[in-house]
Amino acid sequence: MARAGVTCLDCHKPHEGVLKAEGNALCLQCHSETASERFAKQHPNGLFDAPAHTHHPVGSTGSQCVNCHMPQRTYMKVDPRRDHSFVIPRPDLSASYGTPNACTTCHEGKTDAWAAEEMDKWYGTAWRQRKTIVHAFAGTAKGGPAAVDALRNLVEDRDQAGIVRGSAIAQLGRIGGADVVADVKAAAGDPDPLLRLGAAEAAGALPPAARLDILGELFGDETRAVRVAAATALGGAPTPEFLGDQRGSFEAAVADLRAYIEANADFAEANNNYGMFLMGQRRAQDAEKAFRQAIVLDPSLSGPRINLAELFRATGQDDKSERTYAEAVAASPDQADLRYGHALSLVRAKAMPAAIREFEEATRLDPGNARYKTTLSIALDSIGRTEDAFKLLASAIDAGEQDANLIGTAINYGLKLGLYPESLKYAEILGRQQPDNPRIADLIAQLRAATGAK
Image (tube, rainbow, N blue to C red; front, side):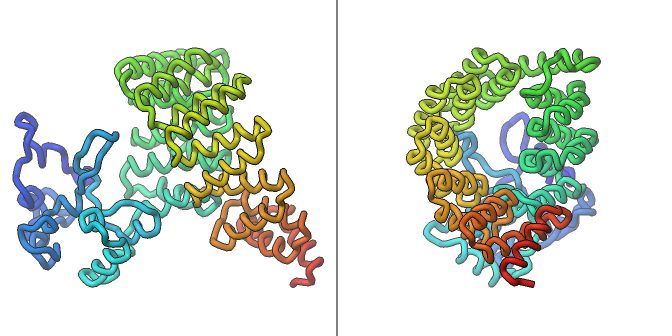
């Protein structure tokens, strides 16, 4: 809608604080049977306010455009309002990824599969093939080349909105590491500020040298949000003494960051982000204060608790780290990332049985996370349960897991257990992912010789 030129004032009266029209008449300003000259290129015209399209009686709740395309959601836990992404309901994606959809939100007790079948009856099945960004973002939990390629395609697709491309490059930086430095650097020079903002966030996950090279150009960006994100993302990169000619821009960006924090001091997220910056600058006491303030403002937010626990770990206070994670888990037991962090702290405390229980909980709560499964398998192997570790990973691979680290770990345990046919199968999967890796090619050759396979 925004990219087509629609603005807030097309629907809202700015001074009265009310809508310009009531009910479906608001949408029919443009989505009518008569083509709108203003949106001729988008072709928003057609007969929409009729049962042939809505498949609900005229005047009913289900016949209202906003109830299907702008369902009410609660934002920031306290702000119930309509979703302004203007989406078409996709119950098929809900069945795959657990995302909400307007159909089953209204028809309580009905399943996503039921809703999808009803839409098939109404519109045929072509709607299931509509272009969507969901697959690319959902695939990031598994990682691997497929996830990187899917996100890279979104970044390069200039038909996508800036917020989508920017979100994609930010996520690409988190899962791609050194392999996506060129992508992030290119995004940092894009004319769209949302893409540059995503590049600044992505740079925070890159190796220090690459991070500084990219952020140096963004400290003086014309958009303040980009400058603030760049300063925040510097993290543990070289201190200002290594910035050279960029030091002035960096200090100006830090001033912007401080001003942003002061203006948003009542938001937990702002304090958490500032704590991350302070932690990266080795100002441990100030970082702890910022994280604790974030927790006070929103006790249910997991990020500040994780960061506080990791601050304690980084400063050699392992007891405090484990205790902080335990308190966080008690407050939010269904947060997979808290369970995982707590498990790692228990490993450091050499409490392996308890750590394994927490790894198992993290995996149960987020079954698509390859890193959780891999780390759980390593923990199982460390206490002599290599067979259980291999079964866990084998099950994930057989179900379609493509993460290279997970597959490589499974191969190692298969070799350790003498399971050569299984190891060969997984090595061949890895070989297809990395066809130019001579070590994998050599391993495949050795396993084929050992098993008599061709």
